Image (cartoon, rainbow, N blue to C red):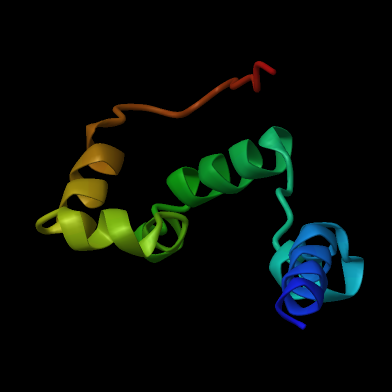
Length: 90
């Protein structure tokens, strides 16, 4: 009987990682692509939208940084002049 239980558990553990139905909730994250992210960042910088830039940073990094919105604002203010051109290198 013990051999049967061990065999069933081994089988279930072997198929668990490859079962699409079980992994679906973990695969819902998508990466929009470098071009989309670059355009979003540049739009936020051009409109001086500190909240949008802050929203792009992970919660873990937000906790690790002091005065994040102040630092982002200082970065945006440091850009002197108009941004004429930007490129996304991939």
